[in-house]
Length: 405
Image (cartoon, rainbow, N blue to C red; front, top):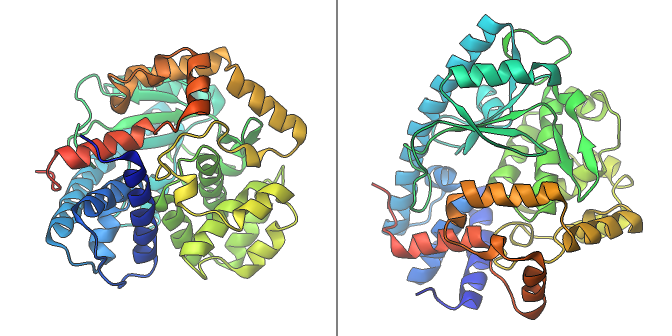
């Protein structure tokens, strides 16, 4: 039996904020939490992707907690070795095929040396190819033994034909490595597309694996990705840590590239994630960056971003929201489109929901996403509805040992 959901919600918020403070400024006093709160802390550490970093930096002294973090770091390090080997195979295949590929986000951060093996979990490998090379890239992945699992507006998802996700809490060395293939780098905020592909794809691509054109381009991608996750209430503490680490090693020239790198639109979406970075990692971002972004960000979003916390824009907020991210609308017309889409989802959204039910472990046996949409709306209006992804993690934390063998 789960504890009362109000208790779980409060505990997740409390532990999430404490973890963020400890990661940003290690050395805070060990919390005087009860057994449930320590288990919820393990949930927050996992869903925010920071268990290995906390193992490395946190000074909190709790035997079960330390064992859990150490176990997670071991699993992440082992998994990183598998990912590195797979990237080498992809590089060799791309060279042979004359195919240019850009490894994205976590892979790029590791390549820059901002993380060492074991620091940063990677749920999958994200790859960018030119739109005309999608077929060639698909052939390469099929030759590597992968099969296409499903496609959505952002990417195609490829998985190994065998193996299954670990059913307990946290990372596991043997979890299959998924590959997400992108031809565009874009986010819906909340309904209009923001596309920065031209800033990310190299000017002179070479066969094999390619780096981002600049650190400014990588920062653009990290911030847009964080913005998209804030909009959908799925931001992770790891995203903020990524941005803080990259910012700390960016020069004035790097920031100039962030502003000018094939710019086709303002960076209005960059201010809210940077504000959150500043909230937890004070001083990580130059003040001049905030000064320059202020007037580009819409008033409502700019005002709300002053007060948002990590918990509020992540899955640590246990309840589902009827209109998550509506504050990202840049006009009343766009907000109206968003509300209409929520009331009557498109065929594309319905297909994506069906793919989630079919492929996501945490949705197996759950009927919420298969209910008639009108029934779901009525439920939203009459009672709080918990998020199934975080509820799955909470159950795993309470039903299994804290350390993974």
